Image 1 (tube, helix red, strand yellow):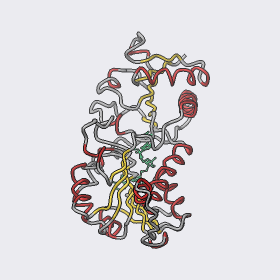
Image 2 (tube, rainbow, N blue to C red):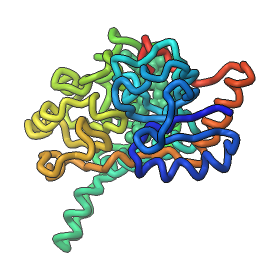
Image 3 (tube, helix red, strand yellow):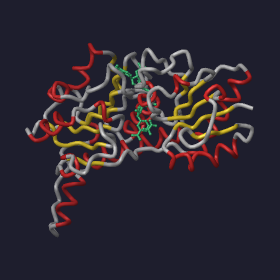
Image 4 (cartoon, rainbow, N blue to C red):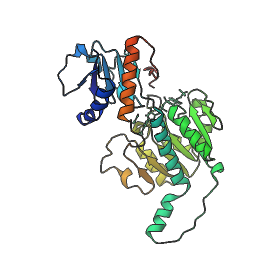
Length: 312
Ligand code: NDP
Ligand code: OXD
């Protein structure tokens, strides 16, 4: 019998244990910090942001499963045992929810919803016209992977002019592709609404900074739905307050939960949501763990293995 160690906050464990018990009844599940266990007995780990050093302390660890699509919380551990395969959670429903969130906030901005909310609050009938047609509104997506591609396709189908930026050139029908640092400026110069869907790696940390904002056209809008570590919050506030950017939607933050006194909460041109763009569904994720362990035990190859050197 294999043993899986859940390395998550204790209140999460209650959510994860029932589906794991149902879908992988042969698995011995232990909860880090709650259940006694011998570190030599742990075969697998399921986690999102493990305390540093925990994974290294498990000498017979065979694989680590990430509870999320992003694995930065796992790879940020300087002692992460790199010989151990790390498998990230890739799920079409999660990607679909992420795309929905991005479409919602692109449309909220494009359709001037904040303006009409204010008008309603003042009981004013303000029939303002949209500044331009969708086909003339250029959406740019940083990261054209699983989620970025689906988001690009959804926005393309709503007739926006969509482009994506990635390390390698990607081919997505009806979506312009930019690749690498050399093409970043050209990508930014043609972007009215910028969506960040990059993984957080040493190369992408702080990428949403004053220099990048200056390369966007005046009036551009920013949506960060990837990780708080991508954004220099003070630079964003400065770029909006100077009038260069028109506003932003943020789902992720450097410190989560976002501290009550953070100025982002009250900025009139910033929408804040509490890291809810998409949440991994316990039953689906439990199935991915059960399938992954079964494949590993049979010696079959696993999908969605992260390259620790690349960071995603
Ligand atoms: P993928 O790994 O599928 O895609 C990543 C994309 O980013 C790829 O296109 C990749 O390029 C590109 N990329 C990575 N590094 C660079 C770089 N240095 N320069 C240019 N492009 C780069 O990731 P997903 O789409 O599955 O997920 C993206 C992120 O979304 C996750 O890492 C996570 O942080 C976040 N997320 C947030 C959630 C939320 O609730 N807010 C929920 C789920 C995910 P290439 O194609 O060339 O490899
Ligand atoms: C993820 C997340 O990475 O929920 O899946 O942030």
